[in-house]
Every structure is written in C-alpha cells, then in structure tokens.
Amino acid sequence: MASILSAGTTSATALNMSADTSGVLQLASNNGTVAVTIDTSQNIYIGSGTSYNLKDFRTNSISSTGYQKLPGGLIIQWQSYNGGATSGTITFPIAFPNKVVAIQASYDNTGTAVNGFAFDSVGGSTSSINFWNGVLIGFNWMAIGY
Image (cartoon, rainbow, N blue to C red):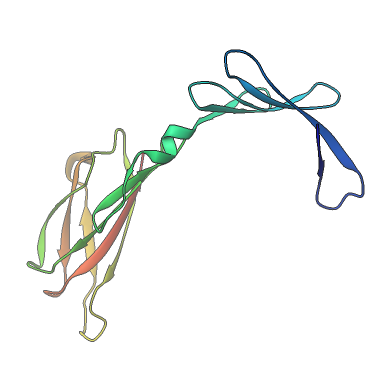
C-alpha cells in the first residue's frame, strides 16, 4: 500500500496496488474506487472509462521531417523546406486520416526581407498542401490535424 498526498491537503490518501495473474495492474483508493488500470495491451484506463494506449506515444518519426501521433487521434507533423522555389506542393510525412486543422511556418533566414506565406489545402487534401512563399529562402513548417 502507498500513500499519496494531494496538493493543498494535509492528509494522505492510501492507494492499494494489485496485479492479477493475467498481468492487469490496478491502483485503487482504500474505499475501492479504481483510479488507474493498466492492462496487458498497454491500455491505461483512468477512473471508470477514459483510456489511452501507451503505444500511441511511440507512433512517431523524429527527425528534421517527422510526425508524432498523440492519443485521441491528434497528429503533429513538421518539415524544413530548402527554399528551392517560391511556390510548390508540400507532401506531409504521413497523410492525416481526416483533416488538416492548422499550418504554421517560419523563415529559416531572418536576415532577408520577406513578404509572407500562403497555404492552400486544395480540395481538402490530407496528404499535401500548396504553398506560396514571398522570397526564395527556406522555411520550417508545422501542421496539426487528425
């Protein structure tokens, strides 16, 4: 049994930890309310229903062009564009299953006067996006979607 002291309190709540023969781990308060359950498929259940899979945090490609899938379906992607053209199409590292929600970009070279960016998701594409760049310099972009 372990005791947890919550912020702003002076008394600790005792937690009981148990594991059954199938490998399911549970943390419960001493009144029997289950706080956290971790099953053999690496699913984490918080309280009576919200679940997350630990494997979701490992679905990524971390490099200069990459992505991170988050529990719940949100995906963050990024890339550095080398500045070879003032307009073109960027292909995402992976396609968003449903929708691109936002694109953010910043110039790679702050010593050059710039005119700005424009992005356009032609036909609601979830695998690529068109860009228009005011000058022929590199930029970094980040996209969020699900």
